[in-house]
Image (cartoon, rainbow, N blue to C red; front, side):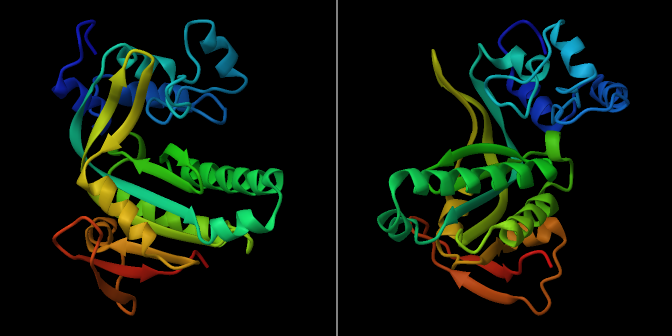
Length: 256
């Protein structure tokens, strides 16, 4: 990106992975054994390559540890973004209020920390990035530049794995949706956040809220983008709070 304030076109290139030289960087860095690594350019964080690259300004970005300083560092001082199609995953613990009433605060905190850890590992496995943890909920973004063209399929796979790997004491309801969102760096001064905004994000949140414990609701848009075989899946026409139009969704099972 240029040294000037990044343009919307430059942001779009960053978010879709259409940056000159990116494929070459990925090929080079992929040869260095390491985990984890940058979701965009594949720069290693761990040994043996990570410590060496850190000497040259590499390493995870403080804005989002899934991206390296080289990739997102050019954007840290300039808010902005672009509208791109992404897939979004919302997951939250069902009955968390009741759980909190039944156990000491420290024990409840440890339970949520366990949920966060499971969610982070699963999302990372499927090339998503954790947008945020909010109370008893996790929000993950599957952006083409990081997850590739199969971002919708990756989001669905991550959601199924999350349901399968969550222990019984963490009953989850999960929603996955695909749509156009504004993705970028928003905020002012020291209060900046790399995130996604827009109706698609809100719709995913509402979708997740309607999922029962142990249930995954995949919107028709996400199912189509993911190439999901919906034959035999329960279909629902949902009224999402705050939206005039209903949303078609399918009930998918956890990974078997």
